[in-house]
Image (cartoon, rainbow, N blue to C red; front, side, top):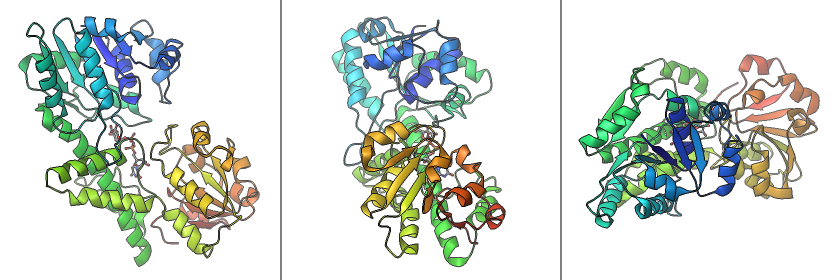
Length: 434
Ligand code: UGA
């Protein structure tokens, strides 16, 4: 079976490499020549644990190319994993998907299965099939399948090879046979594969991401209330999470969710609900809560310093939207730094992977440090924005030793009370009472 994967971003590249690990020969196509060259040299354009090792292990099974004509005309199955960014109004922008579909149309020579992995609004797969059937002669048969991904950045390779479930939306028995065959190496390991209609598969993706986003916003609201009434969110989350009906995942309070998925997908689902006049009030609430929560530590600092941050030396620890990635898409750090600059503070930032990307946004408006001790040295205030393990493990006595005044606002609740109480650090976090 000739498998082609289009797009070498998080979804496409991880999918392609995982198929190689599952035993297939794969052609990875992307129109960005620079990325293709990088991949051919054994380097991944994205920062993802274990990915380059697998690329190396399977270098004889994976071909990277921008020659989509040849790839598409010989393919039996094409997986599409290109981006679906957000339009200004919050709807999903499908231009990259349409580009690929048109390229496929120009090059199709035989029966083909097209599998959409990208997150697309409900009904998109049906529209694509309709469009293709209008344009194609009856000589070739094309089937469209929705196969949303559930990869998390930082653990994407693991998630692809050992997913919690494989969701497949399709409308034909032929397509089902092929999809079951492709995923056989995983279903043989008892990973559940669920067949449903295409619209249900598309909705499963949006509903899953939005539910997780909602869970985070919920726990953040409870954390804010905890602060008012003297409860502790860590204890509350722990107490709630032990109920298997609730589960202990995604109950970590903090300064909200970021990344390329939750913010975009909640908005797209909300827009769909508006369009169909079936408004999802819970999702709207989650979006609004998250917007406010992102700036919570800035508001705390501002209040404690009587609205006067002018000239204060502030260090921001952690920039990426979550640890173990260099991704800054929708990262709270960006808005936080913008606000602090506006208030006249002098900013230094520290991160393990995204300093170079951050420089592209803030240029010489702020200082950059790749060593945490240098970053905190002589600073008035430290803000913890991303819970990199190196920050969590950083010894508290260092803040006392190197900062001008050891004051920490911890947006990710990295440190525990007992340890903090052994120091003279002035420490504030989210939803916890001292
Ligand atoms: C998310 C989903 O978890 C994946 O299942 C999905 O496939 C992916 O989106 C996607 O649609 O492609 P990802 O964006 O990589 O994955 O990151 P998560 O680990 O889900 O974290 C998202 C955000 O929520 C981060 O900013 C994180 O800091 C925040 N978060 C997470 C919390 O604030 N609290 C929590 O308890 C958990």
